[in-house]
Length: 381
Image 1: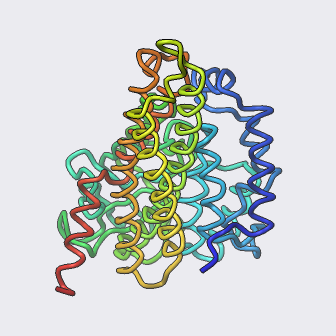
Image 2 (image 1 turned 30 degrees about the vertical axis):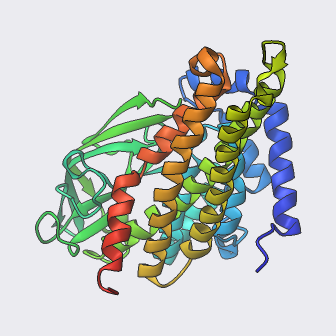
């Protein structure tokens, strides 16, 4: 089976690599992270010009009709460059939700604006007491006068600091934990009753906690059918997890290259430390972990677009769990082999390691996905 990138994908990869080398080196990235926005608005506009923001969107709405494997190409480079822009939340997660589940009027209104770089949306699907469980929804949605009234809280909204809209999961029926009765709403940031508490994350990005207090929405804010939102969110999170797996692979490859170069240049006892047998073995383990992770990321990307929900979720969880373990190994070994310099802020190695840690904790850590994968095998057994 052929797993190499197509000519178009390689061209996209080459273009993004040149952009990172020219406009997004490590020092510039540190400046973007310290800025009020937490990312580069100029880079975001550049992504729109390159077609990255419209890559997975339908051609009917100005998109390029790309698949999850095309997004993988982009996210791999996002990892290598440690790019900070809200691509995962706006384009992959929320753009995918609108593409797959919104009405034609909603698609026509929102998708072209996403592709042009004029709209950022964040997914608000997690709550403090629910950990990673998407069915844990205490946020309430009450039908009122042809519209809806929302009240509740959402936690750790990725890229929520800069979002103009939020896709919020709220319970319109049933009790907390039920799979049915969850609805998805498009909530403007400036709507009365919305409070956004933004904060920086350990890897340099931004997140936010969301408070909704009697937020009034019209009927057009509902995405998909009332009460059927959980499947919509699960699909979006699976796409996001597959994209995160690709980003982690890009980071691991960059860490391996940085570590290998360090081993070749750092000398002890008159010889490069890369000639020491013990370090050779550790470097080999890191390379194997990255290569196996790449295979798992491909599996996740291939199945992310599958209509078979069970197969999709199983493949994505397997990849997220394995890559979380491999990323820990590669990150820790890279830091240790760089010695004390491996943890200083001035060296990109420490930033790669922090981002790998954040990727593991985003949309389900190793333990969460291992539990889901093992439970998915029980009916077959």
